[in-house]
Image (tube, rainbow, N blue to C red):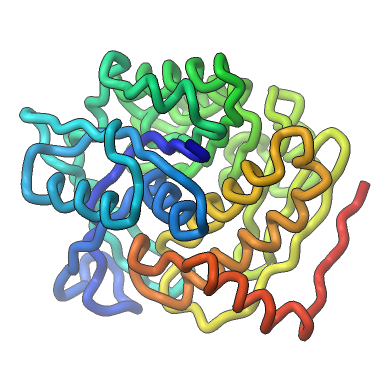
Length: 327
C-alpha cells in the first residue's frame, strides 16, 4: 500500500449559495468529506494505492461514505461502523471563496470513537506512508488510536505525514489543541500547516523563523501552504518557495487535502532518501492539485485526476516559470 490515511470521514453540508454566513444560508447540500478521507481519494485519483482507517455510524450516511470510498478505489478494510453514534456532519458556509465557516454535529460523532483495537494492523505494517490530522486527537478513544497507528507505522519504517488542520470549535480550548498537536509533532516526518497554524504553534507568522522552530521539535520537513501564493518548504538541508497558481476560485473546501494527497503521491514515488532533492517539484505538483480543486465546489467531488494535474501544469508552467529553492 502506498498511503494509508486515518481520521474523520463525514458529510459536508455545503451551502446552497455562497457569499452568506451560516445563519444566512437557505439550505445545505450533503457531500462526502473529512480531511483524511479527502486525502485518500485525492491520492487515489493521482495514481497511488490508498486505504482509509476510521469510523462512521451505522446509518445511511455511513453506508454512503463507504460506497464513495470503494467507488474511488480506496481500500475500506479499516473502516469501522458504530452502533451507538451517528456519522459526523459538518455544516459549512462560504462568505468568500477562500474563507469557510464550520459547525460540526459531533457530540460524539462516530469518528471520535475509533479504538486502538479496531485498527487494521496489516495495512499499517505494510504502508509506505501514513497520513493523519489533528481532528482525531481531540477526544478519546480516537486520540489513542491515532498515536497507536503512528507507532505501528513508524515501527515498519513508513513516512508519517501530519496535517495540523486546526478547527477551534472541535477543541475544549486552544491550550488543549496546542498540547495534543505538540505531542504529535516529534512523531511526524512531514508536517503541513497554514500561516495561522504556524502562528498557533510558534507565536510567529514569519515563515522561515516559525519553520526553524518546528524543525527543532522533531519533524524532518515542514510545509506551509500560502493560498494563491503557493507554499514554502523547510528541512535541515533545504528551504524555499514553490510558486502558486492563479485560478478563478469557487470553493476552498478540500484544497489543502488535494495538496496533501498530491504531495504524498510524489513523496512515496521518490522515497524517503530522495525527499530533499525532489521536494520543490513535489510541491509544485501539489500546488497545482490544490488550485484545480478550488475551481470546483465540494471536497471529494472537486479533487482532480492525475491527467488533469499534468495537463494543467503543461499549460501554465511555460507562461509563468517556477521559483527556485534556497539551500
